[in-house]
Length: 502
Ligand code: SF4
Image (tube, rainbow, N blue to C red):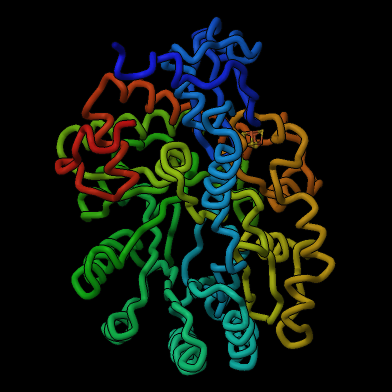
C-alpha cells in the first residue's frame, strides 16, 4: 500500500502565466532573461521557446528555476509570486527612500592645481573670495540639507580645492553637528581634496570629526604629474606622501583615491594598478573623462574615443583579476557596482547608475555662489555658461521651490530608464541607469538618443563583460571568490567558494 501520494500529486495544475521580463539572444544561441528585480537566467533556445509557448513541463529543473526567480506563475505560487517579486523590486529601488542623500558643498571654486582635464573650470588660487562660499550661503545650504527627509546623508566638500578654505570646511562640519543635535540624522563627512595642502591641523580635525578623505591619484609619477601639474612642485610626491600620512592618522579605510583616465593613462594600465597597490589602497575606480569644463576644451589633446576607453578597461580588469589570483585583495569599483546589481538583491546607491536618475533625487550640489544644481555635472555645465539644471538659489528660494520646482519636474519626466525609448526594452536596464544631464551635455536633449550615446555604449559593454565574468566563474573557483570578495569587500584569501553559490 502506498504511504505517499505519487509525485504528480505535488506538481502544480498544468498551465502557467509569464511574469514580466526582458530577454535577448546571446552569441552562443542561448537566451538571457532578466526581470524587474534583477533576477536572471540563461536558457537554451529550445527551452526558451517551450517556456514562452507555455508548454514547458514542471518535470525540468529549468521550470523550477523560472518559478523560483519569478519568471512564471503557476498554481504552486499564485498570489505569492507577484508579492515576492514586488518585494524584491521594492528592495532594489530602496535607494529612493528618504530622497536626496548626497549633498555636495563647493566651498571654493579656486584651485592650486591646473589639471588638464579639470571638469569644473576652476578659478585661480589668487582670485579673491568672490570665488568662495560665504558663511550665509554655507549655513543656508546646510539648513536645506538637514531639512531633507533622509535619515542618512553624506556631506561632501568639493572644489576647486576645498582645503584652500579649510575654515569653511571646519565651520560646515561644526555647524552641521550643532544643528543636527535636535534632528538626529546620521551624517557622513567626506572631503574631496588634491591633498597638496594637507597639514597636521587638518588631520587632527578630520580624526576628531570622522571626516573621510577622497583624494585624486592618476598613477605613477610621470603620469600623475602630466595630468595634474602643480606650479613649482612635484604633485605626485606630495600626494603620495600625504595619502600615507592620512592613512596613518585616520586608518586606511578612511582614505580613498580616484583616478581619471586621460589619453596618456591609456598607456599605463598595469602601472596604475601597481601604484594603488603600493599605497595599500584596496580599490580603483577607472573613470573616463567627462564631457565638461576644461576636459571639453582640451579634448583634442587628452581625449580618446569610447572604444579606446573600453579597450583600456578590458586591459586593466584582467590585470586586477590576476593581482587577486596572486593573493592581493583589490577591486575595480565600477564593475563591482554592476556585479552587485546583478548578483545581489541590494541597491548600490551610486548616483550615476540609477533609475530614477541621481540628478536632484540622489545628489544635490550647493555651489559657492548659492546656486543649487541637480548634480556635480550640472554645475560643471553651469561653469560653461549653461544653467539648464540650476534648481534655485539658497538665498532666494525655499526647499520646496528648489526640490519640487520646474527644473526638478522637467528632470523627473526623463529620469527613469524604464520609460525611455531604447532603454525600456533593453534587457540590461535593471542594472543600468538614466542620465539626463549627460544626455543634455552630449546630445543637447534631456531625453537622449541611446544608439549614439557613449553612456549607453560604455554601460552595455561593461555589463556584458560582467556577465562573461559570472559565466566564467562557474568553472573557475578563484574567479568566483574574487567576484564575491569585491561585492562583500572581503579578503579574497578568506572567501568561501561555496557560501554564495546559488
Ligand atoms: S543606457 Fe543603454 S545599456 Fe543602459 S539601459 Fe539604456 S539602452 Fe540599456
